[in-house]
Length: 457
Image (tube, rainbow, N blue to C red; front, side):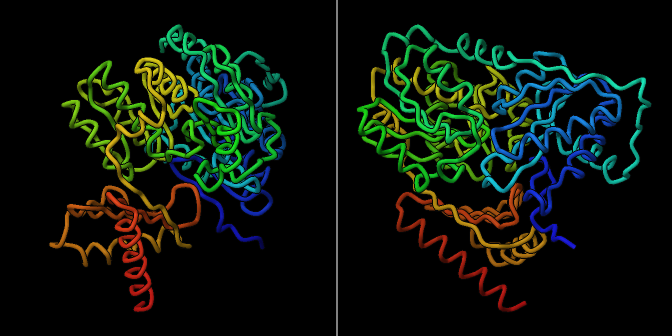
């Protein structure tokens, strides 16, 4: 029997290693359950550029057809464009075949409701309950629908972005931008957006083949090619997307990656300068977000990790939140659509540069400086919860603890955070401080405590 340890099912959808924990049979059954949950009707089906997407996508189509749904296939589509189209087309929901930033041997499914938003935890629980029951309302042959295709599904999203920013101001600057799509889904839209904004777009890995030129997670250690290209082309800025284009990392004009945390921070600081209001980010995002909000005289609201949790808090905020996101490069700008959106993030950063007449490195220096170290150790969600329970006991009375999502411990000069991953079979550990040495000491101390607790089991 094959192992199923790589399968992750939760608020971020379903992800697994192809042929191990993720199979066409599983994809078809999940699509059947989702179609039954929606009660039929039109369902948008998109995918990222991975080679396995065609196979898994066909299984999804078969599952939806079998329960009487009307699939609307849009082909390779970035996640933010897919979500926008689900709402714009007034579909009952949507399934995107994607594993986001996971390596190419992975694939998965993300599920959206009629508003173009991921299912909330209660909705996910209801849908997965149908899946686990395994009894789906199959329709007879005379009630099967034909699959529809839509070739212009990206257009509504592109038009919305161009209408939400000061496109004319950006065009006046004629920025030179190196865009690294890593041969992922972003390649079908990113160059078009930049050219529509009057930029000279130097394309890097812009073939939506799914043959990733580097690890799909847009971390500094994975984007050396982009850094060199920005310097070689004397570009104003470099952008890199993850595989399904909901996350954005930025390289400054010197070829230096400014870090994923600053993608959201730079965008938030600019938006707050135009329209003050609450901002929302997750528990692991940088303290810089609190500093930016404090300077603007607005609250910074924190949510559990996961886009759906940030969006839920963002939409519930009173007064209305003006921007939100996650420190992994995921900017959520509700003026376009309440989802993580690398394309809107690019447009906002370019507008910030144009409005201030400053370089991206100068804008980055305006952000209060912090250093965050992100690490991981092997482990299941159950092991993570056990460690959280034991560590909470150790820290009670010594520092401020927060168990909203795993365990976050706030000290005056730094914080640490441990939690199970929503997307991979690992335990994530993070630390942030004003200086790199302090952050590294904090994370090494946390890892030592974890090792000590594991020895005492």
